Image (cartoon, rainbow, N blue to C red; front, top):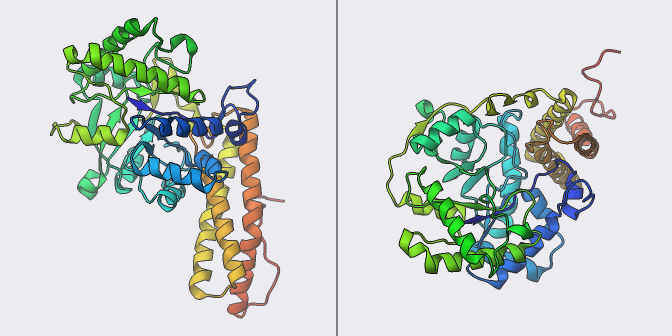
Length: 432
């Protein structure tokens, strides 16, 4: 049982509103409270485990913690009880970004995880993007992931995979040219990415108590037996959690504890099933020991459809101006990074300018990582949230461009070019 939360880096509310729990009239979501309460509950019981994904939010929480609290979290991570899963700055889309943007998004998050916890994420977790690309599978394989998990697949594809026990397979993107270096074990989740029906423990009406414990255990057993019919492994993964859940982590874990204890003592032995707190990495390790022969896949998973009349294709081109603005930000990031690298190698800048270059680079990586989110670059967020994404890009460009221009001026002087005041032109694609 994998306990997790999916926290969109902007969607119905903007990033700050989600983190602080503002505008709950739009959506009840408070990410800082989720992380805080989950850490508290993990510290109470060494059996409990949790997986967290979006490093943008986690770093916002991390910056406000005491040294003692940080050490407690480091211990949870090192014990494998808090898994930094996927660990991109956001959970990026796979249709609209370029491969460089995907890499930058993952790099920004992984850099934080390695620096603070000394670990490298082992598993990709792309549970909400609207279709999947072989390019992303290849990148995840080359990043060193042991596996990756996803939830959204075409309804016809899922029907076939469920019937043929092909919900897990080896995705061999670019296999002809890169071989096993581009191969990755892939798992399609059975019930989207949320808890089984009637087991949403964030809902008080679905929580486990002494009055419904027996009934809930038998219901859960029926679900286990349904899922196990469609996977080849003797291990099955059941997600517990969904969008912005675990604000009430105490209630959620208590219900899970009661269910797991009663089930294992009374139903599990007869069914040869044991329920355990787990993480995707633990699941992958267990499956790898079984030496199963897996089917293979090579191509993309686009377009994605929920049904015959519901196709997720409009976002390929929706909010074209925002997509163009994001491209400009990405272009600025790559151009400035190359120039900053050149200036550092040539040692043509002062320590003060080097410090400014580092700050400017990190500011733009933050912005570009946020807008790679699968509700940002796609154009699927609310208008107010899209406006907030654009504001972040504007402010990011405003922070990086004076530094960028100053480095150009320093390099120009060193090359004997007459010094002028340089600046980035925002009308370079205009006629006037």
